[in-house]
Image 1 (cartoon, helix red, strand yellow):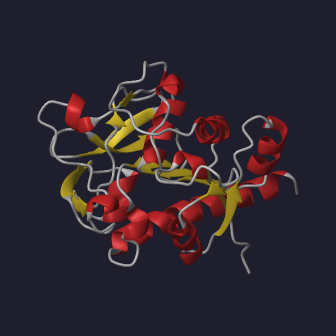
Image 2 (cartoon, one colour):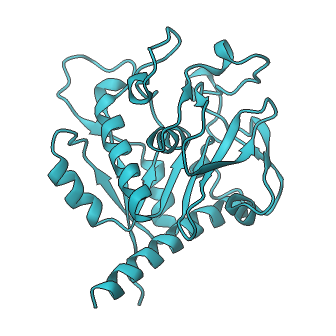
Amino acid sequence: MRQRPVIGIATQTLQSIDRIPEDLPASWVMNQRYFHACTSVGAIPWMVPLLDNDPETLRAIYDRLDGVFIAGGVDMDPQSYGAPRHELCGRTDPPRDAVELQFAKWALEDGKPVFGVCRGLQVINVAAGGTLIQDCAGLVHDAIKHDYFPGAGWARDYLAHEIRVAPGSRLHAALGDERVMVNSMHHQAVERIGAGLVATAWAPDGLVEALEGTREGQFLLGVQWHPEMLLDQHDGTRRLFEDFIEAANQHHDAGTMAFA
């Protein structure tokens, strides 16, 4: 029986989220949906603590992973990509930035599979040297609405707008169509694309909706929407997760053979 791959999912600092009582102890949390999505396609999810000041422990955790999943969450600190903070930038979580960026950079170096959603796409881009738009509505001319946040009354699986997918891309192979409806829960977006990445999907206003790595053989993909909410509704979305887990399996098998 084939071993199930271990997928690391970094946590988020509880205190970085809005409306949290100040007297709660420092805690790490993460949306359960990401873990259920990974287990539903055969993976073992591993919750990664934000030990940003303990690189030795982080590396030991990373080395035990077969793949890295980078979830959605609060805004990235603009300092992580060398930009001044704009007044429209929201709440940030620097320890999470540090851990996810480090994991993404290690994976870029050694070819470990990486799948990022929403904020996860942005982390991948920044790890590769790219930059972000700190608020689409306020800083992008003729931007469509992208911020269909649940707190404003929108369902997390609401299909907000269409995207155009590049033919021949990994994303196109999984989704099986050049036009796909997606949910949308973000207000930041890719600005300058990082090295070794290429855009493979766009919103109607031209903003990047997916990035893929150009390194041959590596699964490196980030999407700007939340596919974990569409897993049970769309066969192509399930294939996307299955492809990620299969890449993690192959990475694990290659590592096992190297030490045999």
